[in-house]
Figure 1 (cartoon, rainbow over the protein chains, first blue to last red):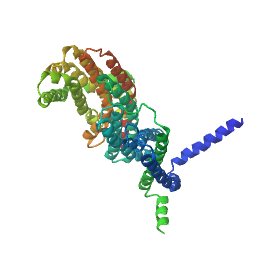
Figure 2 (figure 1 turned 90 degrees about the vertical axis):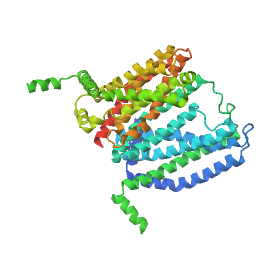
Figure 3 (figure 1 turned 180 degrees about the vertical axis):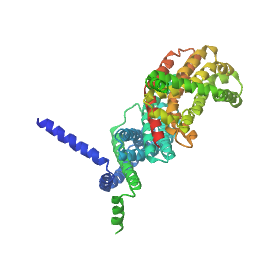
Figure 4 (figure 1 turned 30 degrees about the vertical axis):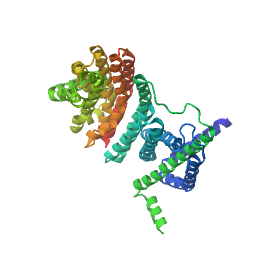
Length: 260
Length: 236
């Protein structure tokens, strides 16, 4: 009986939290108070992580100092992939529950995710030149990241093409969901396709597990880049909220209060 | 008389409705044979570009032929998919379709089926001629036709998703290729892999089976995305 009651309480409180997420003023306020401490922490964490990774870890036995780009490349790639699933999830939520804030989250996610994907591709190319001897390889992982970039840009382009922004978000949500199916298929297909043509002569020089002295700063950087992503999302969503709610009372009050 | 006919109309089963819609689409296509001929002409012309660009050496052409033929099939499918819903959107019959009590899934499937019959099927049937022109080995022609038959079905289904999402937009043409090309890539990979396997004397069966699996997957899911896209475009 007691457990059932507590489950009920948890469910109702979760529902009310979910309900509040749909309210622009609440989201604007709560994201503002989160950003007030998350933004400085992120900046410090990124600075510490970069200094740790780029300056204080030992150089790699085979790659020398060039491997240090891993501290930017891997976190960017991980966040780029995660952002796509967040975008698709937000799209699904907005299609199913017609939540306006999910639309805004999805719209904010696309350019941010595209930037992280681009960063991962560029750092990968820069890393590839000294270690693989080439800027670009049509390897499964690289090709699927490139397709990921195309999918992000497709969502952005589709959103911009619609005049009716409500329809634009719905169309983008459908496209994002279709793309979700595509990414694993692309990854597997290129994997098989590549291995058919020629044996993978160029591989990640890894294989040997990373030493913990290199792994800890990597984990630190992954966490910091996730925090950076969260900050970018919230900042971008706040701008969108203000734009779309510009004519409502609470935004006007906000503007007059901050002016006085 | 009118009452009787309206009763017949109201008791029209979904399958009958779907068949009539398919027939209507095909009749519309046949009345304008140029629309059917254009993708084939495009296919021919682009095939002619490759010997000019790559040089006419037969061995070299044969090496590139599987990928070239598949890419051209993909492009001609892409160029035609923009127009699938456009006419019906402009004259309002698409709106009537959405309002009708028939399941949209099946109606959409009729549109896709008609598109595949006038582009994919025809391309697959004429592809052996171009395969011979590009010096592709005759042993690999069954794999080429088979992979095109299955693969263009998936392409039509995916192209329809893009067409549905962009039908309400004034400048859909360029946008639709940006949206759909990333989705086409797995089909291209397996389609050309099937032909390449046949060229090397390996069995193409596994690749064709994967293409068939993708086709089943797309038939099951893509019409829902198309239906959602059409609703969004009509509402906008």
